[in-house]
Image (cartoon, rainbow, N blue to C red; front, side, top):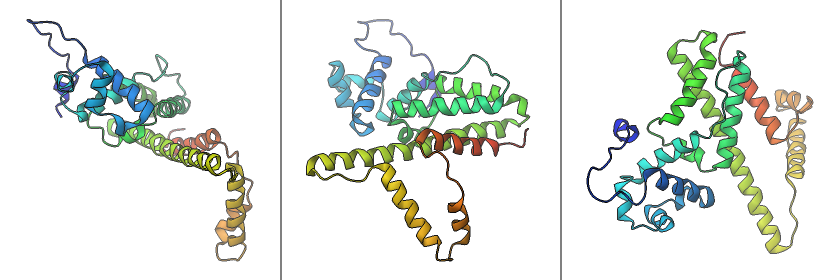
Length: 243
């Protein structure tokens, strides 16, 4: 994939009828389809049906599905709600970026999977990168370290949201089975308590003294938001040696 060809403005045709559709419209339909049915549902045939075009005609706007995926990622990246300038508190600003990334991935559940195969950075993604580099400027990191910090932050959020989405899917399947069979299963809270009891019983045997000590300590808020915030703070605090 040639990033120069992908992200440079498309030349306007000088002759003939104007195109019926646009690359932006095709991308928007692909995002809507992925939001509704998942990334596997995004095919050129399916998108063509949504916009009322012939399948082969789409290739005049997007040469292949890989390119379409790059366009989809960058389109939703434009939905990041970031301030026009850093606040001066780099940790708080990085938390804000991470929260925006998490919210974006929950609005577009296909995004974590798509990011694992991304090949290039479009203009909307570059705007996020630029914001993070501005946030980190006072920290004194060299250029490579600052870019790697952004990569670590995004990787953490992507991995954590992938876990959250997988857990939500498991719970949805359990609820569907309950409705189909009429048998009530355990709630997430009950399962969490059962897991804790099991670990305490295993640790009580003396084979896992450090685990026993950890389990004896007070536990924090188990809500998804609280867990994310705790892990995020630990990750951010370990990124640099800056005060």
